[in-house]
Image 1 (cartoon, one colour):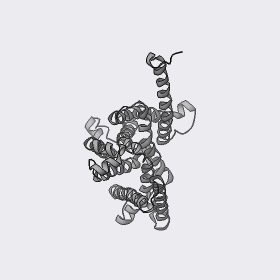
Image 2 (cartoon, helix red, strand yellow):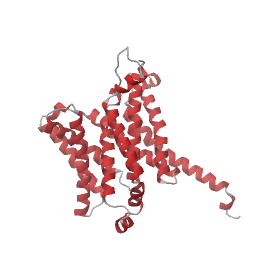
Image 3 (cartoon, one colour):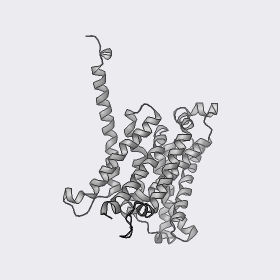
Image 4 (cartoon, rainbow, N blue to C red):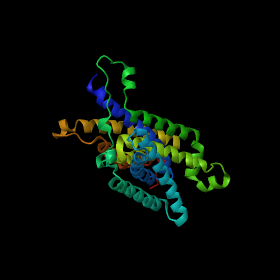
Length: 311
């Protein structure tokens, strides 16, 4: 098996699945102006990971994932409680809860002997894209052997991406009503409150699943940047979702390959961090897309005779 199939392709598959999962739920967060919820959930993952280890006494991936999921859901619930109790803004509430959860995670690491969890700043921030690879025997070179040897985070991301897409398709009308006209949704009953809970669960699962593979920095970028880059060109929610994924995928692939070949191009000793490079590329795509949209709009209006003013 060549190096690309064993090392690069599994990482690219994980990256593309993370884009599908995070960009799908990210569009709803951007429409509701709640992109900071992704930041809060990503920070809340740290005490969840440590708590999963402390409760089970093992570093089992499923224990860690369950703890992170519980912590992510608690973050959203507590942020809502703070908003209702203090009547402050959602961004302020998320900032308070986010800081408290992250501080709790650091305190647990320092005081409860949980350093055995093997968490460090690079793992939390940048994930483990570079460590996702397929190891098969030399005699097993079939596609089935490659698929069965895929790392576990890829299967977790697959489930999260399927849930995010399924929830967005089934509850598209309810999510859209609550995003564009929450007052009408509350009065008419066209979008019950439990649809918000469904969206929160799908969002938390997507962020937690992606956090393990790509880290908190790239998770936040995947939630916000694709939707913001597609917004100037979209004419519908469905169009924005599809366009955000179409825009993000080639950018992410190009950035990943650029990070892997940085020593050859830049003459450096070590390659660039894949998650950080992809996050920077996606962030740069946002102002670029808005600039291109504005230029196209000016040219369209300038060339349209009906929009010309008489001299």
